[in-house]
Image 1: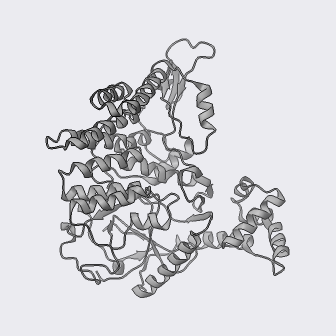
Image 2: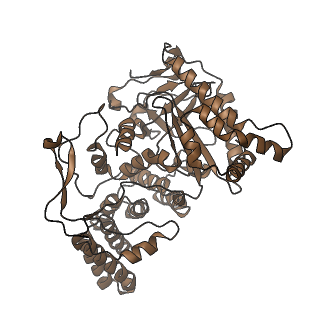
Image 3: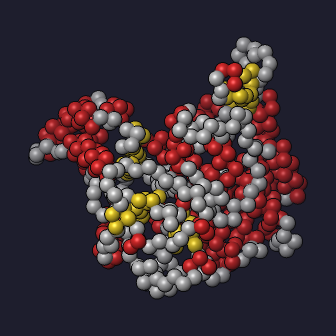
Length: 520
């Protein structure tokens, strides 16, 4: 849809009193969707004084055609991949890129729609146990579990850092010349027909390799040792710092952390790169990873005096973010005593640490202040979690499963718990607002708005806090999945070495995670 069509659609919906919720309720049935929005065609036609727009009719017809195509393909055998000329695909992608860049120059609302017709696949096989497969050896409608220079379109879903990402951010995440290994790739037909695509639903299926990785021994590229138009890699510690700082200053915190990590692989004793990565991790709320970097830097006997206050201050911030407020208060107090110039800033953190401890230990909250803060744009509530006289236990006497029971008599009006969301996402989180729609033709369910990108936010959190995966794995995911343990027991956030961001230690089962969300 063009920008003009989107503007017309929004305006017509407002005039007709049709809400987005009305659209989503009807979207489960393409025919109902068409009946609901048919008046828009006539309105748009009158405004344009031309033939009626078929946008809504086309949308309903497109869904019906996609469903029919996927239903038919389930009964078809795999077919060999037919390679298209590399130059043709590059020209098509460049034209699409230029169109996106032109659209991003002015105010706009991106609409992103995904139609799912095949089951999401999350590989559980280690890379070392898999064999290399080329596109020419692959078949559509098949997940490959077993170098000719062929090319095809790759679609990555649920990947950290991509929500609301501009073209500039995407190109920073995936610079030209990047080498990715896809575990057990699925070659599938596009929902709209046309050339097949490689679809990857789980980000843990993606393995990043450096050009000198031993896994690439014997691999020869058609483009030679250097991909045309790809950025050269820095060769010095200062070069990696400069690249990372460039990303950080533009708010691209994941690419910044990746740059610092790649630099640390080559210069492992660099305290500058390590502390800069800690700052990027703090911005990403990877507090355990930030603490690891800060304390590792402070253990360096050759740490320059000028970097010590940065290490101490960022370590204290990491402890605060992890909910270890007593330790954070102590660190900030040490900082204020050793570096008097930093004392005013430390005092505010000391007070916040005490406030959080009061909330966590006694359930003592300033609800008026919290409400006022919640009304501000882009608010992220800074409150501690609290658990009163309740706990989660197994309930075999009630047919199994788990439930919340009281551990003491509950007084009238007593606060039982304050719990934060595992992840959250809203339009305020990105500089480029987007409208998301995911249409699952297998389950006949449509997700819209930021609910459609929950899996991406979960993957984003686990990327920098691997232990957080336990909190998801121990949740009930419906009768088709293995039952969770009788006790819900997740360890508190801890210090963790995230040496290679976007290299997942644990396989992410995107399909199971989606079922968890639907059973809550």
